[in-house]
Length: 269
Image (cartoon, rainbow, N blue to C red; front, side, top):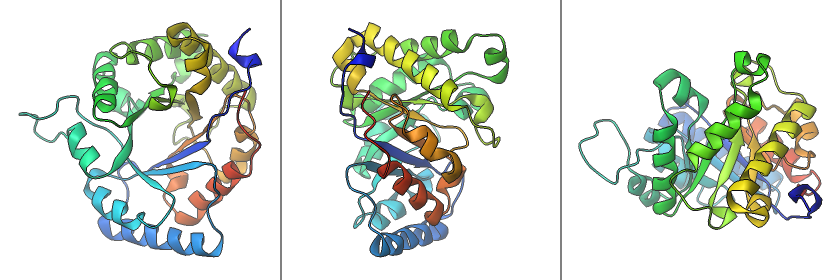
């Protein structure tokens, strides 16, 4: 029996990735506004909500979210616990600030800064070792999709990214499918394209760690997610939530996405 025929309860998850946006002052304002929105209309229970600000605002956002059902995440990490790595941030430093999850292998890190699968794998292992959950990003470029290489690319990125860990408990891993051609472009993959890739990724996870492992790992979609397309994606069986970029920068838009995800049917397959 394939995982697609098994009913699995996976808590929906949405994480806002601010990238290189928001100063400490505007981060404080965001948290204050989100708090006001929560007071007027409570953020839905039964889902997990995270924000990944720039490193310079981690403490500000952590404090600002303290009274909200929203956790702190980080956008990147180095794999070593300490050392002569100028400009880098160690896993323990993020954990000390209260980060629960860390984005690893985002396409902008891969394509703009030359991050390799080997480095991604080291970061995944380091995040897990520090007691946090890695959000492992995978995704193909437009040329790779046009060449019908989507499955080969995302499978390779997933297998190599998990190459230095044992599968373990599925709640200790999140995978995010972010087609590179849809990130920050306004384009979004169709529901059919998203469900096809997410289902394939779950099959790959099953081959790595077994059906129970694959059935418990949450797979997020990222790529120009907005209120206008989120509802149609959230109901797909293998979409367990979103990794949101630009639409997470305004508290009202992010809150709208949270409510859309919270109001969607259960995402178990």
